[in-house]
Structure formats: C-alpha cells, structure tokens
Length: 295
Image: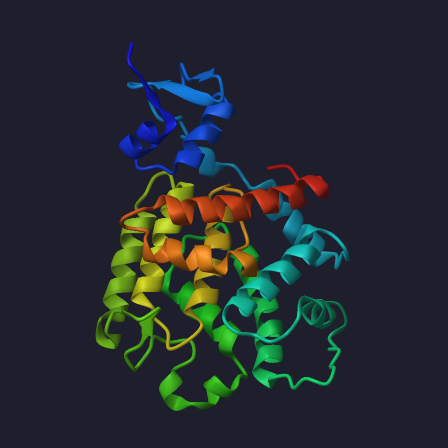
C-alpha cells in the first residue's frame, strides 16, 4: 500500500494541511499512521464521512439564545457579542477600544478620555450587537438575498452613511468600488452575482468549513454594498457555522493581515485563509471549553 504525506493528501483533496492533520489526530482518516512526528496516510484513504453533520442542532446556538433571552451576564453570549463586535469593527477602522465596546454592551454608556470618538463608531457598535442577535435568530434559515440586505440595513442604520442617498443602505451599491486595490463586480451586475452565488451555495447537501470560507471569499470579491461588506461577510460566516453545526470563529484584529492575505490568495493557495480561520476557531474553542459549552 502506498502512503503519502499530509501535504500530499491535502493537495489531492483541496484541503489545508492543518485540516488533514486534525483529521489524523481525531482518527477520522482510515489507516493514517503517526511515524515519529509526521503522519503517513494511505493514498487511497477516503475523506472523512461528514454526512448529516449539519442536521444536528448546534448546542452553541441553543446556549446563545438562552443566555440572550434571560439576559445572562458573563457567559458565552456576552463574551461573543463583545469579541465579535470589537474585532470586526476594529478591522474596519473603528477607534473604540475593547473596554469601550464592553461598556456600551453592558451599560449603554461609553468611557471617553481625551481622544475624540466618532459617533458612527458608537452607532455601528450598537448596531453590530443587533446584527448578532439577528443572525442567531435566523441561524437555521437558508441564507437569502433579503437576509443579507437586512444585516446591512441593521449595521448601517442611523449612521452618517444612511443620510447619503447614493449610499443605499440595505440595498446594493450604486457606485463602483474596490477592495484591497482589486476590482469588484459592477453595480448593475451585483444582484445577479449574489443570486448565482446563493443558488450554488444553497444547493450543497453538506456545507463544510471550506465551503463557508469559499462563500466568504466570493462575497467579498463581489463587494455588493458601498461599505460594510467585511462586517456583513463575517457575520454571515458566523451564522453559517451555527447553521451547519461547525464551530464558529472570530477574526481577531491581530489576525487581520493574515486574513487579508488569505482572501487575496484563496484561489491559488486556499491554505492561507483556512489556517488563519482554523487559528481563530481554536481560540473560540478555548472559550467554549472555559464556558463548558459542547461542540
């Protein structure tokens, strides 16, 4: 029997090498053997069977809803709201500190020092908390065009952008834009591009971790809104992980440059984005372990 390395197996199946190593450690690849510090895998070993993985209700989703509804402080819902909102907004240039984000969530007040604070940063922080509640309420529903627009509407409602007619809050962009110096889909073609993406994605019988990342990459390349695309896209990723019983993750500000590189290199080297998101997932798993939430 021919054996191959985790790198060769990953390349043959379009996976990140780290994902393959995790499968080996978990005993999910038949015949995989640890020799020294490296794994050897039968060349004909099938991919782990993940059938019906998304049919089970996410224990985390249940806990998030319960803690939100009973207004529990200091639990995983509380921590996720603060971590997700702070990091996602900070990636996009918010000047609010994590402590200020926490104060807004817990007390609806903000501590202001000598530095000036943009009102939009405060509004978008409170709006992001509402966006998170929206995605956990609709986590098990198929992702739709109207749902995506509603997330954007909630995020940007009440901001200075909402006062600009051309900005088109809750609707697709009217003016061409770019992301990271790269061209995006023209405004007139956005609707069709999003509908085609959703049709392909929703037709999958078993959505995997990499499917969620691929959707995110394609969504960000379309860049359907005038602004707020990154935050909407990351909220969608969290929602889809909950929907398909995948441990979600939060892209932390310190992972920002690895995350951007992963998006840029997704087609050529998907492992960059996959490994970055797996690192973020490991961090979130530690939180789940601390709060004793099953996954």
